Length: 601
Image 1 (cartoon, rainbow, N blue to C red):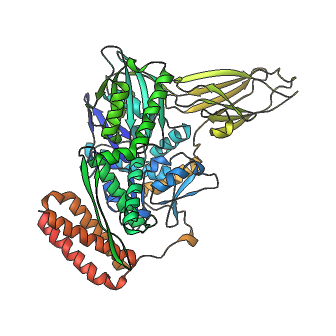
Image 2 (tube, rainbow, N blue to C red):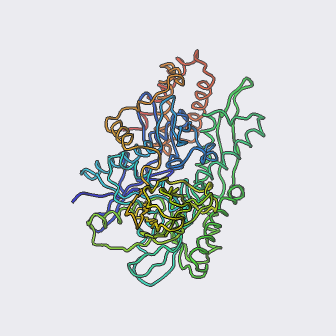
Protein backbone atom coordinates (compact mmCIF):
# COMPACT_ATOMS: atom_id res chain seq x y z
CA UNK A 1 0.00 0.00 0.00
CA UNK A 2 1.37 3.43 -0.98
CA UNK A 3 2.35 5.70 1.86
CA UNK A 4 0.40 8.95 2.20
CA UNK A 5 1.87 11.83 4.17
CA UNK A 6 0.24 14.78 5.88
CA UNK A 7 1.68 18.24 5.21
CA UNK A 8 1.25 21.48 7.10
CA UNK A 9 2.28 24.04 4.47
CA UNK A 10 2.85 27.02 6.75
CA UNK A 11 3.60 30.69 6.21
CA UNK A 12 6.78 30.59 8.29
CA UNK A 13 7.54 26.87 8.65
CA UNK A 14 6.29 23.65 7.09
CA UNK A 15 6.12 20.15 8.55
CA UNK A 16 5.32 16.70 7.17
CA UNK A 17 4.19 13.63 9.12
CA UNK A 18 3.31 9.98 8.60
CA UNK A 19 0.85 7.75 10.42
CA UNK A 20 2.22 4.21 10.43
CA UNK A 21 1.49 1.17 12.56
CA UNK A 22 -1.06 3.11 14.61
CA UNK A 23 1.53 5.72 15.59
CA UNK A 24 2.12 9.16 14.16
CA UNK A 25 5.49 10.84 13.78
CA UNK A 26 6.82 13.98 12.17
CA UNK A 27 9.39 13.45 9.41
CA UNK A 28 12.77 15.18 9.70
CA UNK A 29 14.11 17.05 6.70
CA UNK A 30 17.49 16.36 5.13
CA UNK A 31 19.16 18.46 7.85
CA UNK A 32 17.55 16.32 10.53
CA UNK A 33 15.10 18.99 11.69
CA UNK A 34 11.33 18.62 12.01
CA UNK A 35 10.37 22.12 10.88
CA UNK A 36 11.45 23.39 7.47
CA UNK A 37 11.40 27.17 6.97
CA UNK A 38 8.94 28.03 4.18
CA UNK A 39 11.68 29.95 2.40
CA UNK A 40 13.08 29.64 -1.12
CA UNK A 41 16.28 31.36 -2.20
CA UNK A 42 18.06 31.81 -5.50
CA UNK A 43 21.81 32.15 -5.91
CA UNK A 44 24.13 31.49 -8.86
CA UNK A 45 21.37 29.76 -10.80
CA UNK A 46 20.62 27.38 -7.91
CA UNK A 47 17.51 27.02 -5.79
CA UNK A 48 17.81 26.86 -2.02
CA UNK A 49 14.99 25.63 0.20
CA UNK A 50 14.40 25.73 3.93
CA UNK A 51 17.23 26.42 6.36
CA UNK A 52 19.83 27.03 3.64
CA UNK A 53 17.55 29.63 2.02
CA UNK A 54 16.84 31.29 5.35
CA UNK A 55 20.57 31.52 6.11
CA UNK A 56 21.17 33.59 2.98
CA UNK A 57 18.27 35.94 3.70
CA UNK A 58 20.32 38.73 5.30
CA UNK A 59 22.87 38.74 2.48
CA UNK A 60 20.43 38.34 -0.41
CA UNK A 61 17.07 39.69 0.81
CA UNK A 62 15.74 40.45 -2.68
CA UNK A 63 16.54 36.91 -3.85
CA UNK A 64 14.94 35.13 -0.89
CA UNK A 65 11.21 34.39 -0.95
CA UNK A 66 9.38 33.99 2.36
CA UNK A 67 5.75 34.12 3.52
CA UNK A 68 4.55 33.02 0.05
CA UNK A 69 1.42 31.56 1.64
CA UNK A 70 0.20 35.13 2.10
CA UNK A 71 -0.01 35.56 -1.68
CA UNK A 72 -1.12 32.20 -3.02
CA UNK A 73 -4.47 32.41 -4.80
CA UNK A 74 -4.81 36.18 -4.22
CA UNK A 75 -5.18 39.13 -6.57
CA UNK A 76 -2.46 41.77 -6.65
CA UNK A 77 -4.93 44.50 -5.74
CA UNK A 78 -5.73 42.64 -2.51
CA UNK A 79 -2.15 42.28 -1.21
CA UNK A 80 -1.07 45.91 -0.92
CA UNK A 81 -1.02 45.90 2.89
CA UNK A 82 1.22 42.80 2.85
CA UNK A 83 3.93 44.17 0.55
CA UNK A 84 5.84 46.01 3.34
CA UNK A 85 6.28 42.64 5.09
CA UNK A 86 8.49 41.13 2.37
CA UNK A 87 11.97 41.74 0.98
CA UNK A 88 11.37 40.61 -2.61
CA UNK A 89 9.44 42.05 -5.54
CA UNK A 90 5.89 41.11 -6.50
CA UNK A 91 4.31 42.42 -9.69
CA UNK A 92 0.79 42.03 -11.17
CA UNK A 93 -0.03 40.05 -14.29
CA UNK A 94 -2.57 41.27 -16.85
CA UNK A 95 -5.18 39.23 -14.96
CA UNK A 96 -4.12 40.92 -11.68
CA UNK A 97 -2.60 37.70 -10.34
CA UNK A 98 0.61 37.88 -8.29
CA UNK A 99 3.99 37.13 -9.83
CA UNK A 100 7.31 37.09 -7.98
CA UNK A 101 10.10 38.85 -9.89
CA UNK A 102 13.68 37.84 -9.06
CA UNK A 103 16.02 39.85 -11.30
CA UNK A 104 13.72 39.52 -14.28
CA UNK A 105 12.73 35.89 -13.77
CA UNK A 106 9.12 35.38 -12.81
CA UNK A 107 7.56 32.76 -10.56
CA UNK A 108 3.97 32.10 -9.55
CA UNK A 109 3.16 31.67 -5.84
CA UNK A 110 2.11 28.11 -6.69
CA UNK A 111 5.55 27.40 -8.12
CA UNK A 112 7.34 28.67 -5.01
CA UNK A 113 4.98 26.66 -2.80
CA UNK A 114 5.60 23.61 -4.99
CA UNK A 115 9.36 23.96 -4.44
CA UNK A 116 8.75 23.83 -0.68
CA UNK A 117 6.37 20.88 -1.01
CA UNK A 118 8.82 19.03 -3.22
CA UNK A 119 11.56 19.47 -0.62
CA UNK A 120 9.23 18.01 2.03
CA UNK A 121 8.34 15.12 -0.27
CA UNK A 122 11.98 14.34 -1.05
CA UNK A 123 12.90 14.48 2.63
CA UNK A 124 10.08 12.05 3.41
CA UNK A 125 11.22 9.70 0.65
CA UNK A 126 14.80 9.77 1.94
CA UNK A 127 13.67 9.14 5.52
CA UNK A 128 11.10 6.45 4.77
CA UNK A 129 12.93 4.78 1.90
CA UNK A 130 9.82 4.74 -0.28
CA UNK A 131 8.35 6.83 -3.06
CA UNK A 132 5.72 9.36 -1.96
CA UNK A 133 3.06 10.37 -4.46
CA UNK A 134 0.03 11.22 -2.30
CA UNK A 135 -0.63 13.68 0.49
CA UNK A 136 -3.21 15.52 2.55
CA UNK A 137 -2.37 19.22 2.75
CA UNK A 138 -3.78 21.65 5.29
CA UNK A 139 -4.92 25.24 4.70
CA UNK A 140 -6.25 27.96 7.00
CA UNK A 141 -9.96 27.57 7.67
CA UNK A 142 -10.43 31.07 6.30
CA UNK A 143 -8.85 30.31 2.91
CA UNK A 144 -11.30 30.97 0.08
CA UNK A 145 -11.85 28.75 -2.96
CA UNK A 146 -9.11 30.39 -5.05
CA UNK A 147 -6.55 29.88 -2.29
CA UNK A 148 -7.54 26.25 -1.75
CA UNK A 149 -7.35 25.45 -5.44
CA UNK A 150 -4.00 27.21 -5.76
CA UNK A 151 -2.65 25.11 -2.86
CA UNK A 152 -3.90 21.97 -4.54
CA UNK A 153 -2.21 23.08 -7.76
CA UNK A 154 1.06 23.54 -5.86
CA UNK A 155 0.78 19.96 -4.63
CA UNK A 156 0.29 18.72 -8.19
CA UNK A 157 3.34 20.71 -9.33
CA UNK A 158 5.36 19.01 -6.57
CA UNK A 159 4.37 15.60 -7.92
CA UNK A 160 1.73 14.92 -5.28
CA UNK A 161 -1.80 13.67 -5.72
CA UNK A 162 -3.59 15.75 -3.09
CA UNK A 163 -6.22 13.41 -1.64
CA UNK A 164 -7.78 16.08 0.52
CA UNK A 165 -7.34 19.71 1.47
CA UNK A 166 -8.41 20.07 5.11
CA UNK A 167 -8.65 23.02 7.46
CA UNK A 168 -5.79 23.49 9.91
CA UNK A 169 -7.95 23.76 13.06
CA UNK A 170 -9.76 20.56 12.05
CA UNK A 171 -6.43 18.77 11.62
CA UNK A 172 -5.38 20.01 15.05
CA UNK A 173 -8.56 18.59 16.57
CA UNK A 174 -7.74 15.19 15.08
CA UNK A 175 -4.19 15.31 16.38
CA UNK A 176 -5.26 16.09 19.92
CA UNK A 177 -7.52 13.02 19.84
CA UNK A 178 -10.35 15.16 21.06
CA UNK A 179 -12.78 12.62 19.73
CA UNK A 180 -13.85 9.92 22.12
CA UNK A 181 -15.04 10.30 25.67
CA UNK A 182 -17.68 12.72 26.88
CA UNK A 183 -19.47 15.34 24.83
CA UNK A 184 -17.82 18.73 24.94
CA UNK A 185 -17.33 21.97 23.06
CA UNK A 186 -13.78 22.94 22.17
CA UNK A 187 -12.16 26.07 20.70
CA UNK A 188 -9.15 25.62 18.39
CA UNK A 189 -7.04 28.80 18.58
CA UNK A 190 -4.70 28.66 15.57
CA UNK A 191 -2.25 31.59 15.59
CA UNK A 192 0.39 30.84 12.97
CA UNK A 193 3.10 32.69 11.13
CA UNK A 194 0.84 34.44 8.66
CA UNK A 195 -2.77 33.57 9.41
CA UNK A 196 -5.18 33.27 12.32
CA UNK A 197 -8.16 30.90 12.62
CA UNK A 198 -10.56 30.13 15.43
CA UNK A 199 -12.86 27.13 15.14
CA UNK A 200 -15.55 26.00 17.57
CA UNK A 201 -16.10 22.22 17.59
CA UNK A 202 -18.59 19.92 19.25
CA UNK A 203 -17.07 16.56 20.16
CA UNK A 204 -19.28 13.51 20.64
CA UNK A 205 -17.57 10.12 20.65
CA UNK A 206 -15.91 9.61 17.25
CA UNK A 207 -17.75 12.59 15.78
CA UNK A 208 -16.09 16.00 15.48
CA UNK A 209 -18.49 18.65 14.23
CA UNK A 210 -17.26 22.13 13.41
CA UNK A 211 -19.93 24.56 14.57
CA UNK A 212 -18.29 27.70 13.23
CA UNK A 213 -15.02 29.11 12.02
CA UNK A 214 -13.68 32.61 11.73
CA UNK A 215 -10.30 34.14 11.09
CA UNK A 216 -7.99 36.62 9.45
CA UNK A 217 -5.63 35.61 6.64
CA UNK A 218 -3.48 38.70 7.23
CA UNK A 219 -2.83 38.23 10.93
CA UNK A 220 0.05 36.15 12.27
CA UNK A 221 3.56 36.09 13.66
CA UNK A 222 4.81 37.96 10.59
CA UNK A 223 2.68 40.93 11.64
CA UNK A 224 4.15 40.76 15.14
CA UNK A 225 7.61 40.84 13.57
CA UNK A 226 6.63 43.83 11.45
CA UNK A 227 5.42 45.86 14.45
CA UNK A 228 8.66 45.12 16.28
CA UNK A 229 10.69 45.95 13.15
CA UNK A 230 8.94 49.29 12.78
CA UNK A 231 9.63 50.07 16.43
CA UNK A 232 13.33 49.17 16.08
CA UNK A 233 13.61 51.27 12.92
CA UNK A 234 12.05 54.19 14.75
CA UNK A 235 14.42 53.78 17.72
CA UNK A 236 17.40 53.73 15.35
CA UNK A 237 16.17 56.83 13.55
CA UNK A 238 15.61 58.69 16.83
CA UNK A 239 19.16 57.96 17.95
CA UNK A 240 21.01 58.53 14.68
CA UNK A 241 18.61 60.71 12.67
CA UNK A 242 18.93 58.30 9.74
CA UNK A 243 16.11 56.48 7.92
CA UNK A 244 17.35 53.03 6.84
CA UNK A 245 13.94 51.64 5.82
CA UNK A 246 15.04 51.58 2.17
CA UNK A 247 18.27 49.66 2.80
CA UNK A 248 17.31 46.00 2.08
CA UNK A 249 20.24 44.41 3.95
CA UNK A 250 19.83 46.57 7.08
CA UNK A 251 16.08 46.09 6.97
CA UNK A 252 16.42 42.31 6.80
CA UNK A 253 18.83 42.31 9.75
CA UNK A 254 16.22 44.23 11.75
CA UNK A 255 13.46 41.82 10.68
CA UNK A 256 15.53 38.82 11.74
CA UNK A 257 16.30 40.49 15.09
CA UNK A 258 12.60 41.27 15.58
CA UNK A 259 11.72 37.61 15.02
CA UNK A 260 14.40 36.54 17.51
CA UNK A 261 13.12 39.06 20.06
CA UNK A 262 9.54 37.80 19.68
CA UNK A 263 10.61 34.20 20.29
CA UNK A 264 12.88 34.97 23.25
CA UNK A 265 10.33 37.22 24.96
CA UNK A 266 7.96 34.25 25.08
CA UNK A 267 10.23 32.71 27.73
CA UNK A 268 12.15 35.71 29.08
CA UNK A 269 11.05 39.03 30.54
CA UNK A 270 13.82 41.13 29.02
CA UNK A 271 16.38 40.84 26.21
CA UNK A 272 19.20 42.85 24.64
CA UNK A 273 19.01 44.03 21.03
CA UNK A 274 22.52 44.27 19.57
CA UNK A 275 23.04 45.05 15.89
CA UNK A 276 26.55 46.45 15.45
CA UNK A 277 27.42 48.31 12.24
CA UNK A 278 23.80 48.25 11.12
CA UNK A 279 24.45 51.18 8.82
CA UNK A 280 27.49 53.14 7.69
CA UNK A 281 27.69 56.58 6.10
CA UNK A 282 30.32 59.31 5.75
CA UNK A 283 30.24 59.92 9.53
CA UNK A 284 31.10 56.30 10.29
CA UNK A 285 29.35 53.10 11.44
CA UNK A 286 26.09 53.21 13.39
CA UNK A 287 24.87 50.54 15.81
CA UNK A 288 21.52 49.59 17.28
CA UNK A 289 21.86 48.60 20.93
CA UNK A 290 19.01 48.69 23.43
CA UNK A 291 17.03 46.71 25.99
CA UNK A 292 13.53 45.44 25.26
CA UNK A 293 11.30 44.06 28.02
CA UNK A 294 8.16 41.99 27.72
CA UNK A 295 5.96 44.82 28.97
CA UNK A 296 6.97 47.09 26.07
CA UNK A 297 6.63 44.19 23.64
CA UNK A 298 3.09 43.48 24.85
CA UNK A 299 2.13 47.15 24.56
CA UNK A 300 3.28 47.11 20.94
CA UNK A 301 1.32 43.99 19.94
CA UNK A 302 -1.77 44.56 22.11
CA UNK A 303 -3.98 45.49 19.13
CA UNK A 304 -3.01 42.33 17.20
CA UNK A 305 -3.90 40.05 20.10
CA UNK A 306 -7.20 41.90 20.55
CA UNK A 307 -8.01 41.16 16.91
CA UNK A 308 -7.71 37.43 17.61
CA UNK A 309 -10.11 37.78 20.57
CA UNK A 310 -12.60 39.65 18.37
CA UNK A 311 -12.48 36.71 15.94
CA UNK A 312 -13.20 34.39 18.89
CA UNK A 313 -16.27 36.47 19.78
CA UNK A 314 -17.56 36.24 16.21
CA UNK A 315 -16.99 32.47 16.07
CA UNK A 316 -18.93 31.95 19.30
CA UNK A 317 -21.78 34.10 18.02
CA UNK A 318 -21.90 32.13 14.75
CA UNK A 319 -21.84 28.83 16.67
CA UNK A 320 -24.77 30.08 18.78
CA UNK A 321 -23.13 29.08 22.05
CA UNK A 322 -21.87 31.07 25.01
CA UNK A 323 -18.36 31.34 26.45
CA UNK A 324 -19.36 29.16 29.39
CA UNK A 325 -20.15 26.30 26.98
CA UNK A 326 -16.46 26.00 25.98
CA UNK A 327 -14.63 23.44 28.12
CA UNK A 328 -11.20 23.56 26.52
CA UNK A 329 -9.05 25.78 24.29
CA UNK A 330 -6.41 24.09 22.13
CA UNK A 331 -3.33 26.09 21.11
CA UNK A 332 -2.04 25.72 17.55
CA UNK A 333 0.69 27.60 15.70
CA UNK A 334 3.98 29.09 16.90
CA UNK A 335 2.47 32.50 17.68
CA UNK A 336 0.15 30.88 20.23
CA UNK A 337 3.22 30.67 22.49
CA UNK A 338 3.17 34.44 23.02
CA UNK A 339 2.35 34.92 26.74
CA UNK A 340 -0.02 37.85 26.08
CA UNK A 341 -2.09 35.69 23.72
CA UNK A 342 -2.40 32.96 26.35
CA UNK A 343 -3.21 35.50 29.06
CA UNK A 344 -5.98 37.05 26.96
CA UNK A 345 -7.36 33.63 26.03
CA UNK A 346 -7.45 32.50 29.65
CA UNK A 347 -9.26 35.69 30.63
CA UNK A 348 -11.75 35.45 27.75
CA UNK A 349 -12.67 31.76 27.87
CA UNK A 350 -11.94 31.08 31.56
CA UNK A 351 -11.30 27.38 30.93
CA UNK A 352 -8.49 24.87 30.43
CA UNK A 353 -5.75 25.82 27.93
CA UNK A 354 -4.43 22.68 26.23
CA UNK A 355 -0.68 22.87 25.45
CA UNK A 356 0.02 19.13 25.45
CA UNK A 357 1.31 18.93 21.87
CA UNK A 358 3.93 21.00 20.07
CA UNK A 359 1.98 23.83 18.36
CA UNK A 360 4.39 23.67 15.39
CA UNK A 361 3.70 19.98 14.73
CA UNK A 362 0.09 19.38 15.70
CA UNK A 363 -1.45 20.30 12.32
CA UNK A 364 0.85 18.02 10.33
CA UNK A 365 0.11 15.16 12.72
CA UNK A 366 -3.63 15.62 12.24
CA UNK A 367 -3.18 15.73 8.47
CA UNK A 368 -1.19 12.47 8.62
CA UNK A 369 -3.93 10.75 10.63
CA UNK A 370 -6.52 11.91 8.08
CA UNK A 371 -4.25 10.73 5.25
CA UNK A 372 -4.00 7.26 6.75
CA UNK A 373 -7.79 7.10 7.10
CA UNK A 374 -8.36 8.11 3.47
CA UNK A 375 -5.78 5.62 2.20
CA UNK A 376 -7.18 2.79 4.32
CA UNK A 377 -3.88 2.36 6.15
CA UNK A 378 -5.38 3.00 9.58
CA UNK A 379 -8.23 1.48 11.52
CA UNK A 380 -8.66 4.77 13.37
CA UNK A 381 -11.86 6.35 12.13
CA UNK A 382 -12.96 9.89 12.87
CA UNK A 383 -16.09 11.40 11.38
CA UNK A 384 -15.44 15.04 10.54
CA UNK A 385 -18.19 17.52 9.86
CA UNK A 386 -16.46 20.69 8.70
CA UNK A 387 -18.00 23.97 7.56
CA UNK A 388 -17.50 26.50 4.79
CA UNK A 389 -15.89 29.73 6.00
CA UNK A 390 -17.56 31.98 3.41
CA UNK A 391 -21.02 32.41 1.90
CA UNK A 392 -21.45 31.49 -1.78
CA UNK A 393 -23.91 32.97 -4.22
CA UNK A 394 -24.45 34.95 -7.38
CA UNK A 395 -24.58 38.56 -8.50
CA UNK A 396 -28.06 40.04 -9.03
CA UNK A 397 -27.79 43.54 -10.48
CA UNK A 398 -24.83 44.48 -8.31
CA UNK A 399 -26.18 42.87 -5.15
CA UNK A 400 -24.87 39.63 -3.68
CA UNK A 401 -27.50 36.88 -3.35
CA UNK A 402 -26.16 34.11 -1.04
CA UNK A 403 -27.18 30.51 -1.77
CA UNK A 404 -24.91 28.66 0.66
CA UNK A 405 -24.31 30.63 3.85
CA UNK A 406 -21.03 30.62 5.79
CA UNK A 407 -20.62 27.97 8.50
CA UNK A 408 -22.82 25.54 6.56
CA UNK A 409 -21.67 21.96 7.14
CA UNK A 410 -19.83 20.47 4.16
CA UNK A 411 -20.07 18.57 1.90
CA UNK A 412 -23.35 20.20 0.92
CA UNK A 413 -25.54 20.85 -2.09
CA UNK A 414 -28.33 23.45 -2.28
CA UNK A 415 -30.67 24.16 -5.21
CA UNK A 416 -32.56 27.38 -5.85
CA UNK A 417 -35.06 28.24 -8.58
CA UNK A 418 -34.23 31.19 -10.84
CA UNK A 419 -35.98 32.52 -13.93
CA UNK A 420 -35.74 35.00 -16.78
CA UNK A 421 -36.48 38.73 -16.61
CA UNK A 422 -37.21 39.34 -20.33
CA UNK A 423 -39.71 37.68 -22.67
CA UNK A 424 -38.17 34.89 -24.78
CA UNK A 425 -34.82 35.28 -23.06
CA UNK A 426 -32.51 32.54 -24.38
CA UNK A 427 -29.44 33.07 -22.16
CA UNK A 428 -28.82 33.48 -18.43
CA UNK A 429 -25.42 34.66 -17.18
CA UNK A 430 -24.28 33.62 -13.70
CA UNK A 431 -21.47 35.39 -11.84
CA UNK A 432 -20.41 33.16 -8.93
CA UNK A 433 -19.16 35.00 -5.83
CA UNK A 434 -17.76 34.18 -2.40
CA UNK A 435 -17.90 36.50 0.60
CA UNK A 436 -20.12 38.29 3.10
CA UNK A 437 -20.64 41.80 1.68
CA UNK A 438 -24.08 42.77 0.36
CA UNK A 439 -22.41 44.41 -2.68
CA UNK A 440 -21.10 42.00 -5.30
CA UNK A 441 -18.04 44.11 -6.10
CA UNK A 442 -16.70 43.69 -2.56
CA UNK A 443 -16.72 39.88 -2.70
CA UNK A 444 -14.38 37.41 -4.39
CA UNK A 445 -15.25 36.46 -7.95
CA UNK A 446 -14.95 32.71 -8.51
CA UNK A 447 -16.09 32.56 -12.11
CA UNK A 448 -18.75 33.34 -14.74
CA UNK A 449 -20.74 30.94 -16.89
CA UNK A 450 -23.82 31.06 -19.13
CA UNK A 451 -26.82 28.81 -19.66
CA UNK A 452 -27.83 29.10 -23.32
CA UNK A 453 -30.66 27.78 -25.51
CA UNK A 454 -33.30 28.29 -22.83
CA UNK A 455 -36.76 27.39 -24.23
CA UNK A 456 -38.54 30.64 -25.34
CA UNK A 457 -41.23 31.72 -22.88
CA UNK A 458 -42.64 34.84 -21.23
CA UNK A 459 -40.48 36.49 -18.58
CA UNK A 460 -40.67 34.66 -15.26
CA UNK A 461 -41.98 31.43 -16.78
CA UNK A 462 -38.83 29.25 -17.26
CA UNK A 463 -37.89 27.17 -14.25
CA UNK A 464 -34.11 27.10 -13.98
CA UNK A 465 -32.59 24.98 -11.22
CA UNK A 466 -29.36 26.53 -9.92
CA UNK A 467 -27.38 24.11 -7.74
CA UNK A 468 -24.39 25.06 -5.61
CA UNK A 469 -22.24 22.26 -4.19
CA UNK A 470 -19.16 22.25 -1.94
CA UNK A 471 -17.14 19.05 -1.67
CA UNK A 472 -15.03 17.74 1.22
CA UNK A 473 -12.04 19.77 -0.01
CA UNK A 474 -14.07 22.96 0.21
CA UNK A 475 -14.09 23.19 -3.61
CA UNK A 476 -17.08 24.78 -5.32
CA UNK A 477 -19.24 23.33 -8.12
CA UNK A 478 -22.20 25.15 -9.70
CA UNK A 479 -24.79 23.83 -12.17
CA UNK A 480 -27.76 25.41 -13.98
CA UNK A 481 -30.54 23.26 -15.53
CA UNK A 482 -33.51 24.31 -17.67
CA UNK A 483 -36.27 21.85 -16.78
CA UNK A 484 -38.24 22.39 -20.00
CA UNK A 485 -35.50 22.18 -22.62
CA UNK A 486 -33.23 19.86 -20.67
CA UNK A 487 -30.26 22.17 -21.28
CA UNK A 488 -27.60 21.91 -18.58
CA UNK A 489 -24.46 23.96 -17.94
CA UNK A 490 -21.98 23.61 -15.09
CA UNK A 491 -18.83 25.19 -13.76
CA UNK A 492 -16.31 23.66 -11.40
CA UNK A 493 -14.19 26.36 -9.84
CA UNK A 494 -10.76 24.94 -10.64
CA UNK A 495 -7.59 26.69 -11.70
CA UNK A 496 -9.32 29.90 -10.64
CA UNK A 497 -5.89 31.27 -9.87
CA UNK A 498 -5.38 32.03 -13.54
CA UNK A 499 -3.20 29.02 -14.48
CA UNK A 500 -4.32 26.80 -17.34
CA UNK A 501 -3.68 23.05 -17.40
CA UNK A 502 -1.02 23.67 -20.06
CA UNK A 503 0.72 26.22 -17.83
CA UNK A 504 0.58 23.84 -14.85
CA UNK A 505 2.23 21.09 -16.91
CA UNK A 506 4.92 23.47 -18.16
CA UNK A 507 5.79 24.57 -14.61
CA UNK A 508 5.82 20.96 -13.40
CA UNK A 509 8.18 20.05 -16.22
CA UNK A 510 10.58 22.82 -15.16
CA UNK A 511 10.51 21.57 -11.57
CA UNK A 512 11.04 17.98 -12.68
CA UNK A 513 14.17 18.92 -14.65
CA UNK A 514 15.39 21.28 -11.91
CA UNK A 515 15.78 24.13 -14.37
CA UNK A 516 14.96 27.77 -13.91
CA UNK A 517 11.76 29.23 -15.35
CA UNK A 518 11.98 30.35 -18.96
CA UNK A 519 10.05 33.58 -18.44
CA UNK A 520 12.63 36.36 -18.73
CA UNK A 521 12.46 40.13 -19.08
CA UNK A 522 15.69 41.37 -20.70
CA UNK A 523 15.13 45.05 -19.98
CA UNK A 524 14.95 44.35 -16.25
CA UNK A 525 18.10 42.26 -15.97
CA UNK A 526 20.84 43.42 -13.64
CA UNK A 527 24.60 43.28 -13.84
CA UNK A 528 26.27 40.28 -12.28
CA UNK A 529 28.15 40.95 -9.06
CA UNK A 530 31.96 40.74 -9.28
CA UNK A 531 33.20 37.17 -8.63
CA UNK A 532 35.12 38.23 -5.52
CA UNK A 533 32.01 39.86 -4.04
CA UNK A 534 30.07 36.64 -4.60
CA UNK A 535 32.85 34.68 -2.86
CA UNK A 536 32.69 37.04 0.12
CA UNK A 537 28.91 36.68 0.31
CA UNK A 538 29.17 32.89 0.05
CA UNK A 539 31.82 32.77 2.80
CA UNK A 540 29.66 35.01 5.01
CA UNK A 541 26.78 32.55 4.57
CA UNK A 542 29.07 29.63 5.49
CA UNK A 543 30.34 31.53 8.52
CA UNK A 544 26.81 32.29 9.72
CA UNK A 545 25.81 28.65 9.24
CA UNK A 546 28.82 27.56 11.30
CA UNK A 547 27.92 30.02 14.07
CA UNK A 548 24.29 28.87 14.11
CA UNK A 549 25.36 25.24 14.56
CA UNK A 550 28.09 25.78 17.18
CA UNK A 551 27.31 29.09 18.87
CA UNK A 552 27.17 27.58 22.35
CA UNK A 553 30.78 26.37 22.02
CA UNK A 554 32.19 29.87 21.51
CA UNK A 555 33.09 32.31 24.27
CA UNK A 556 30.96 35.44 24.41
CA UNK A 557 33.96 37.65 23.62
CA UNK A 558 34.76 35.54 20.53
CA UNK A 559 31.15 35.63 19.33
CA UNK A 560 31.08 39.41 19.68
CA UNK A 561 34.34 39.80 17.74
CA UNK A 562 33.04 37.62 14.92
CA UNK A 563 29.71 39.46 14.83
CA UNK A 564 31.54 42.79 14.70
CA UNK A 565 33.71 41.55 11.81
CA UNK A 566 30.61 40.29 9.95
CA UNK A 567 28.97 43.69 10.34
CA UNK A 568 32.06 45.46 9.02
CA UNK A 569 32.08 43.21 5.96
CA UNK A 570 28.36 43.88 5.43
CA UNK A 571 29.09 47.61 5.51
CA UNK A 572 31.93 47.33 2.99
CA UNK A 573 29.72 45.34 0.63
CA UNK A 574 26.95 47.87 1.09
CA UNK A 575 29.31 50.71 0.13
CA UNK A 576 30.71 48.72 -2.86
CA UNK A 577 34.22 49.42 -1.60
CA UNK A 578 35.81 47.02 -4.09
CA UNK A 579 39.40 48.03 -3.27
CA UNK A 580 39.06 46.33 0.10
CA UNK A 581 37.60 43.09 -1.29
CA UNK A 582 40.90 41.13 -1.67
CA UNK A 583 41.98 41.88 1.91
CA UNK A 584 38.49 41.23 3.31
CA UNK A 585 38.20 37.97 1.37
CA UNK A 586 41.55 36.70 2.70
CA UNK A 587 40.65 37.56 6.32
CA UNK A 588 37.24 35.99 5.97
CA UNK A 589 38.62 32.81 4.42
CA UNK A 590 41.21 32.47 7.20
CA UNK A 591 38.56 33.01 9.90
CA UNK A 592 36.27 30.46 8.26
CA UNK A 593 39.05 27.86 7.97
CA UNK A 594 40.22 28.39 11.57
CA UNK A 595 36.68 28.11 12.96
CA UNK A 596 35.91 25.04 10.84
CA UNK A 597 38.98 23.25 12.20
CA UNK A 598 38.15 24.33 15.75
CA UNK A 599 34.46 23.48 15.77
CA UNK A 600 34.09 20.49 13.49
CA UNK A 601 35.55 17.02 14.07
